[in-house]
Length: 147
Image (cartoon, rainbow, N blue to C red; front, side, top):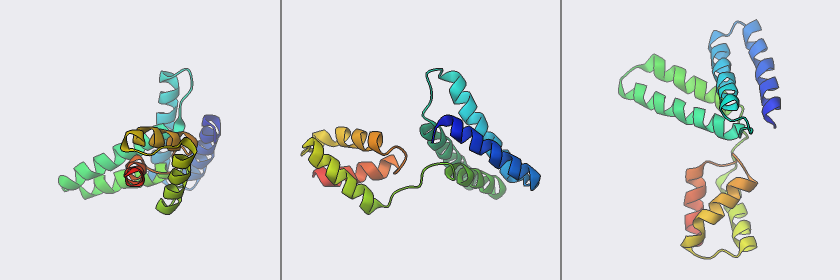
């Protein structure tokens, strides 16, 4: 999906949320749309919308964790709701066994064999399969594969 397709989907979803008078969802979609538009303005060469949305998901999780520590359950719930809305626009995550299989293929294709090659393996995976798995999982699986 391109950035323009994402923005069109956000517009359609925003209209639906407004028609159904779902204020919570309307607000969350507006936040997503604003983050994409802001990223575009700050990067005239184009943006990787997957990275923009992943960053927003991470921000929401961090905020929810902070609210949990402060015993602000309503704010925590709001942040987690927004996180779920944002994640709905991201590509679906792969199962770990799929990721491990793909990493094995990439390792063989590039003839990688040692821990020193871990960065190259992770970068190649993320280039070929953007947003399909979180970085921590890819890192953990790559490390296991190269030891």
